[in-house]
Each structure stands twice: as C-alpha cells, then as structure tokens.
Length: 319
Image (cartoon, rainbow, N blue to C red; front, side, top):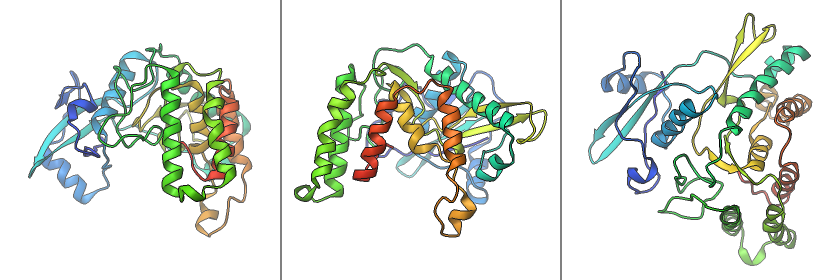
C-alpha cells in the first residue's frame, strides 16, 4: 500500500485536473485502511506525499484498461477534509521487487543484464503501442497541470491538450525561452544561447518521429520496480518489471521518450558521489541506457543529440 496526499499547485478546480469521479473505489480490492490509519502511518512511517494524486491515479487506471503495461492496481482515492482544504489519499497495490543500482549492476553477468534490459524495454514498447488519440496531452483529451516542466507556459490554466504537433513545439519553445529569460539577464544572454534557441523550432519541425505516443516522462531507475524470477537479481532466469510514478505522462512526440531517457535514466556510483567524487565509472551507465534504448529502436536520435547539446551549453533541460 502506498498513499499520497493531493494538493493542487494552484487554485484550479479539481474537475479541471481529472475526469475521474472522486472519491474513487475500485470494484474489487483488499480491505482499505481508515483515514485514521493513514494519518498514523504518515506520522510514524515514511508514506509518500505528493501533489497530482488524482491525475496519476486516472493515468494508471487507463493503462490497466487499455494496455499490457505492468502498473500497480489502484484500489481507492479517499477524501479527507481539514480546515478549508480537501485532501485525497491514493491507495494502491504494494509491488514486490527491487531498485537496480550501481553495485547490483556490477555483480550481474552479461546475460542477466541483457534479459533485465529486455524486460524494461518491453514495458516501454507496450506503452508506445497504445493507439494514438491524435493529440498531445493527457488521457481523455486533457491537459497537464501548470507546473509540468515540458510546457510550463501558464500559471492558472492547464497546459494543453495540443491538437497539432506545431502547437506542441510552439509551447515547448515558449517554455525554454521563459526558463532562459528567468535564469539570465535577458539583455546579456550569450550569443551561443540565442543561436541555439533559434534552432529549436526548425530542428523539431523537421523531426520524423513526431507522432504522439504514450510516454513516461520520468524513466528513472527508482521508478522501475524489478522482481527477479527464480533467483536473485544477479542470477535470475527472468525478471518482472513494474513501472511507477505516472505523474505528467501522456501522448507526446515519439522523440520525447528518448530525451527523457537521456536525462533521467542514470546508474551513478552512489558511494563515490557521497565521497564528493564525480562519476568514476560512466561505462555501466552508458551500457544500461544503450541496452534499453536499443530495444526501443532508438527513435528520435537526432532530437536527443540536439537537446544534449542544448543542455550542455545553456544549462537548461526539458526534464
């Protein structure tokens, strides 16, 4: 069981964030905790607390109904009033498994690594095979919350949905321009940054992988629960992968998933970083990423390289 506490980032009616009727209770579920149990758990244990609970639950329910992607079951969203605020607690399945890390990867043989990455890529291929709805946005033709990093152009209105690819890249470009102006004195923005900004729309307008596909925008290892089958992580004959943290997912251009992998999918040597060192061994990180993206066919390679260069030179990223 994992619970989360919903708080709207701005004062927008909840009905604009989701079409899911709240409170929600699945037709079949195990015994649910009481609100008192949840409050006690939040005081005595670590229970995830974040905004965006209801849209994320709606996304997971949609994926359960319309795809083969392995996601936790959503059992309920309970309503709780406190003073002048209303909170929603998401109750969902607890998924058994482990999170891949640097030390674990180092103990695995090539066959185990290949099989695990194959299973991870399989989940993302299931995700990308969901039939397109012809727009760029959240499930059921909805927009994202105003604080989404990718298209953060508004404050009190949802971002999207965007009917065309041109509308989407226009919003993305406006977001990058806004981020750079906020982070710099607009008068003193370096020429190389201005030149790169001038290339954003032409580069993306020429993209071949522009069709909307369902995308997980935070494919970090912490959001992949891996359960070894018949053995340990290092010796298992096979693996079962469950994807979590579905906040801000939706239909996005096919190349966006590759940019997200490049920014979020990391396998750093945590022990070394804690000692104040840089990544001593980058090879495992690059090997992991290459094995997973190869299983997806590496769409959007040109756009991925563009945003890698964009981030290095401007210190601004899509994610």
